[in-house]
Amino acid sequence: MPNHSPTTTLIIVGNSPGEVAGWAVPIAAEARRLASAGGRSIETVLCLPPCQFASGQEPAVAEAAGVFDRIVNPRTTMRLALGLPGWTPAATPVVLHVGGEFWFSRRLARRWSARAFAFVERAHIARAHRGFERIFVPTPVLKERLGSLGIPDHKIEVTGDPIQDAVFADRAPAGCRDGNDAHPRVALLAGSRDSVFSAVFPFWVKTAAALRARAPEVRLLAVVSPFVSPSVRRTLLARHHASLDAAGVEVRHGDRPSIRSADLALTIPGTNTLELALMRVPTLVVLPFSLAPQIPVEGAIEWLTRVPRLGLALKLALARRYISRRPYLALPNMRAKRLIMPELVGDVTPEQVADEGARLIRDRAARLDLAEALEAIPIEPGASRRILAAIAPGGAGA
Image 1 (cartoon, one colour):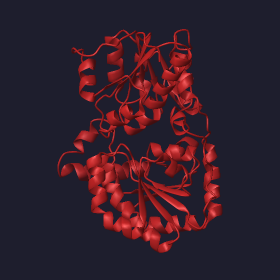
Image 2 (cartoon, one colour):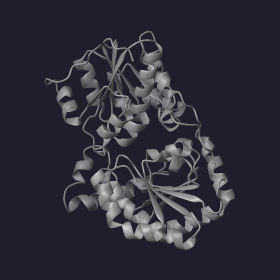
Image 3 (cartoon, one colour):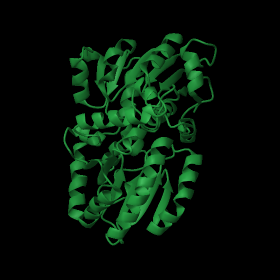
Image 4 (cartoon, helix red, strand yellow):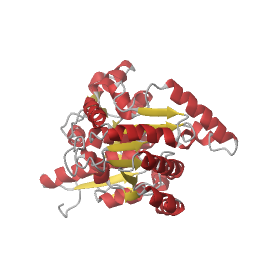
């Protein structure tokens, strides 16, 4: 990067594992690459608003990515949004919303008289779109949906999903695994937030033991997200050390190559289901009702569910109602509008998951069919570049 002062400040607003790793990081990385290639300088800033979906490890993960000049924590982001004294951009800013409450992005843009844009994967921006010059969406279906909700067609642009740039930053998709059929690999993913990980990991430990009994030949990999705090990770691994050893489970830390090379993945609903689909990894999505209360929900209702005694019962009731009204929980199924990634949802036990896992491990043809079905989610990297082109001076968003 040139040493002179930046000509542009790109402020990305969002705060959760999926928003930071899947959207903010690849967009910032591409912005720096484009600036360097053009002999320009850019200041990349990540503003983390307060968010119930955040893990708390977003600052550390974002810093490790090495693509941000500044990371603004939630407390300071709130201060800035309220107009209180604080940090000032080094150059004319552009605000790009990728997650959290739209209020923060609109307030920050107003504070610095900045152009504001948003990338969204759902239609919830319909009531807040007037605060943004242009809205970027991953699919034509979502563009049509936003149009039906009153957003002018010229304001919406289909760019694809930046998560594809994150998934394929290191290499091309691996496709279905066909390497060592004698010892097929099963990856177990337990979520990115401490509360979710603490609830799901023991379930996977029991599943691993049951799966080992049914399919002794498997190689079991427990992949721990980098968004899980070190203290929770150490506590859970120490608590279940004996069971993990007995089941022959290898523990990997934030290891995407281990996930990519798996013959089968077991996971809960979340952004990682989309990543697995893009990597064409046969995946079984599992959500027992007993674990559903640990998953945060949007809006003020989340804080009501944290009330002692009342909160747990309320959240369980809400979770059951939400699940019963949704045809699918995995993102690939939602986007394809059909079941391309199998789901086990309800009063599911580790033994039932192990039964289905063992069946899939022993049926290579079924796994090949699952991997082929995931091709309904097209591989189209380059969304980060398309977003940046639209917000650049003279671009589509100008």
